[in-house]
Image 1 (cartoon, rainbow, N blue to C red):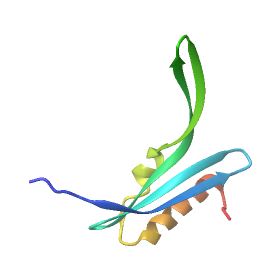
Image 2 (cartoon, helix red, strand yellow; image 1 turned 180 degrees about the vertical axis):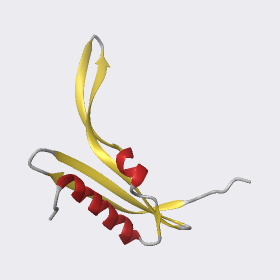
Image 3 (cartoon, rainbow, N blue to C red; image 1 turned 90 degrees about the vertical axis):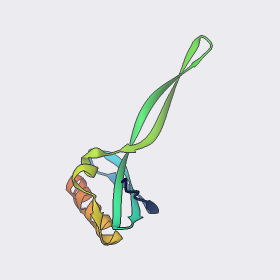
Length: 101
């Protein structure tokens, strides 16, 4: 028999990490389920899209949040408290960008 799991999105937080050498933007979505909370991390990336219009191609740069598997594999699973997920992700961001204020 299949088990249906439901999660409700309860919080979305955008993090902008600006260091001397790099800039990154992350989105943390926190979901509440029957057995606690889980988080999913997205990173903002820029994509070049080409649209075909008659005989011409039009280049469009589009910023999209895409799933960041580097964080999702080892960082965010299930936890009893929503704050633990947020704090744990913040600690991982500090490993990338140094001390954050």
